[in-house]
Length: 378
Image: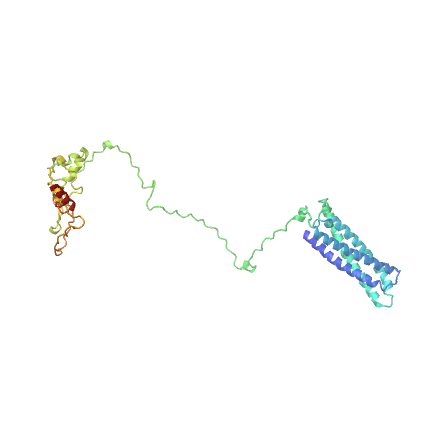
């Protein structure tokens, strides 16, 4: 509602400015057709004053509100006062112009005086009527709202308070959407049959496992039976010749007692008879631990080392260290390449390994040894 009042106010201001400008200009034009010092001349002067003063007041209010939003000119009481005064002046000017001016202007010989009088009277009445309607509407609005708020007269016309009347603030009713109904002709032809809903059982749950779990109907409770009443279980031994128990050898003397039985059984265990072809026979494989367990070191025979040549007898002095050179190595004839020796596949046995020692080193050609020998002889 506030926006409606503001829009109506500015529309009234527009008409008021246009009509006052026309009234002032036509009154100045009509005063030339009326003889001086007459009543019509005074009426024209009054209309000129009313129109000019109305223009001054309206433009002053507009520029004041543009510069200051909450100015006194925008108060409701001030709006009602100045519009009421202007409406009374416009109404009195229109009545006076309608009664006095036509007597002096239309009786003249010049027809332009009558035309100007008619134009002046028409715009004076239109201006008075529009301004009177605006004042009446504003007064009615303030009287209605003053019952709810007595300070409504002090409010700004741009910030009007909301109505406290629930009927005025009631939102518009919500209209439900129109539902589509079947045409009337369809009711008489094929009435719809009402069918009672059929109950539906819930579907059986899917089995998580293919077998039954838990206490199913096929499950039977096993009763407790003490173990003393059960006969002892005797495994049946296979019939065959008795195998003599192996005696612990001297090599296994270093093992503890709890390992003697397992070592003896593993070393003297006979392999199961398996049919083997003559071509598939292989050399016996040595034990996986090699020569372990080792025999006593004190019981092994001792081997004496070969006497090594003394270094003094093998070293010969050299007369000249800088000029003499060691003899070139002897020529070794190249032997034809022999066929590659087959490499044994199995582990080495103690009897197949031979220990060869290199020949003693000949130090007779060393020059330092020769010089020492000559010094000793001299």
